[in-house]
Length: 320
Length: 146
Image (cartoon, rainbow over all chains, first blue to last red; front, top):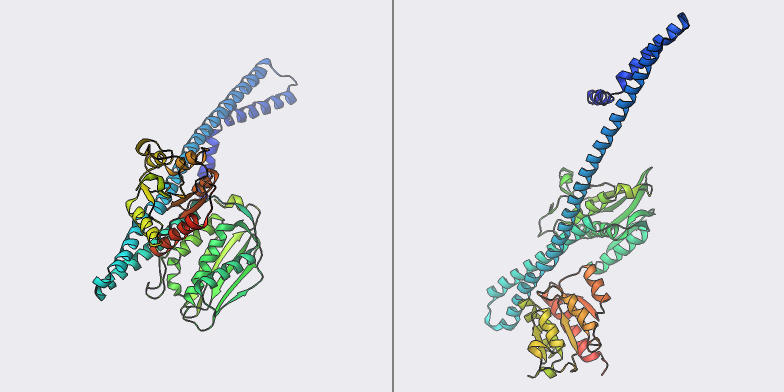
């Protein structure tokens, strides 16, 4: 690292073409001063030499400036091109997400609809095996539909423009928890909500984060008798770290790196339903806020997911 | 069936979606006076009684237009713009029935004066429920100006 820096430094000095004449001029002035002290006179030739050197140094300085501006211009141009490319890629992705949402749903609805119609209108002609097979078709269309919805959410989490403002995180957690409770119809889940500070970020996206984390907790505490979900936070110097903790199935820390991978799952689909997109969405959203996310767990003891959000100052510059 | 008794115009380019929609309406007995057209151009010909539908009376009551957005030739938004922009037809209720859940489509549709926006559920049960609910509402409950 240090060697690199040294190289860098000498490279920079090489560019300073005015340095050599500047040293020379220093020397000449030094000699001039000495001769002034010793003889008390300055010859005209000395004076001319001084002038010439001064002109050389000015020219060198000027050339260097011109060179700098030229490189800057070049870099600017490159940056502009790259930004444009990125913009195009982004637009392409948006169109892709749009067509995923629109075009993939149409055939899916047809498969689901016509298999349902077959089941209803030809019920007396189908034996139990025929009905079982049709049921498999319907279950799988449902899964596919879920997958499309989740991919779309992921795409939105990555590309949707963020509106930064202060968000009451306590209110957000309560709202998400109630939503989950009523949709899962589970009465034996308790929310332990500690006092948590507000965050500066995008409300829709952060709601998605809590929604995914809390719905995971609902899902993985299902087998437990007393299901507890704890949400809290710790205020740091530059950021606040929030956590969602449960007493559910937990996971083996050996797989902690796989938690946030797209379509990654640590349980079989027959054990717990899911597409393996939820935590990827959480990670994308938190990264866009300039924060980090990680998980801790122990099998059959529970899991805790942490995410940090930078404080207001500069968070918009950190996010992207 | 004469065009003059038509109460519902279904504008849908996808045949399977059209069949599922008609089936859902038929179960509630709402598909008796329905015409299905496959693109925006034909929809406009029907509404304004031109081209293939020149025999139709433009003043005849249409209780509901069920409109898809993504269609060949003339798309759904253009159809809304034309219908809502004409004094003779701007009171016809238009319900957008589309796979799109995009905010910009929803906002644009309402800006152009659409009466309702429904995104087609993927699950057939929900789809059938949605179509028959909005059919019952617009054709039986809703009162349009005479």
